[in-house]
Image (tube, rainbow, N blue to C red; front, side, top):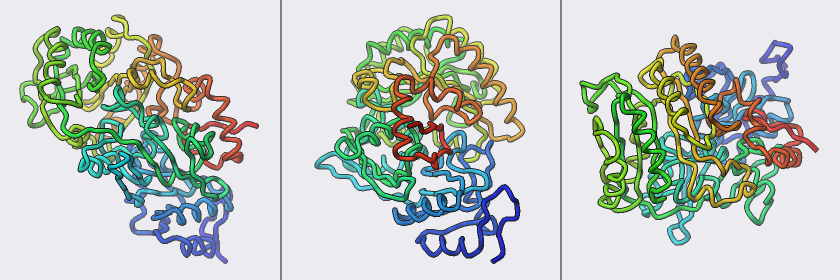
Length: 472
């Protein structure tokens, strides 16, 4: 049988091998000769270009089992793609097998128990659409295009986190295909060690084919952005820092250093000008939200605009989607932040002032409230003593700007990191830096994670991730 690959550093695959896998799948198996290959292999981050040997577009758990067994038995590098939003492109790989779960998008809401069963290909917007009809929501992120699977397995922070905790704090159970092809459920009562590890340990332990989440009453919210000129950034950031501990947990609110987008409906006189923004969502009556925000706004100069108002919760989740379509150039750097002294604020402002593009930004997301009420060893995500999760993101549509985005992100991070903690949110790590920081991120939980990895994936089959090496 003729070989489809001639390079000696690749595992030989015959046409018969590939046809055998294709026969086991209900979904499509796509290779480089398929006319859809280039479109299907595209990643959210246009800075990253990977060429897998095969893409298995799974439509059910049986497909996933077949793909895992095939990849393992043929010695292929395996990458798992859920919603496909991963910043460093860890939903794909060169020369290996991508197990693509993006077609698995079923959602079932149980309003009586306020629980939601979610397939791994869903985005947070998919879930928001399904739950909103019942006046419910699951704590996810701040962009509706984010994939549920990667967000959850890394931790998950967003507008509802202060009140209801991280996404992993609302995970009740997960169905998982393990490296040996077996299927298990992980929960507080079934495979509890695996359940512990999945809540923040990333995709290290298997392919999650289903999530069961706790949902919470959320319907209409008082939400939106408030922008100030960059000349007021110091006052706004200090006021935000001091206001946050006094704010009710129903108010999810973060601060950012950004640029006023050069398009309608933003004020034309401010297009392309650097700005400081506070973006929030109050889960309660609009008049209460306005009163609470008034306590912050009265302590700072008048903003360029204040677009906070009553809206359905899915609307604030999707508010910024148009600015961040698939295919932009992204370079992310992150840190956990325990305190935000005036000196750190000044460094942030100085670095943000030289951002290389209009889309580039820095955000500080609060880590407090419900997150602090969970013990640090209760989940793999253990940085419960942080106050913020910081992300620096260099973003631009032009591929020629990639190096400028990287240089700015690295300089910014180097300047502000002395004020921060050693670890960072794994979903904000790029592949060029993550491995040196994974152990610092998990801290006291790292050894336990490595032990769970050794039990469920001793051969490190699932290593295209922020990898935790197995140890006995």
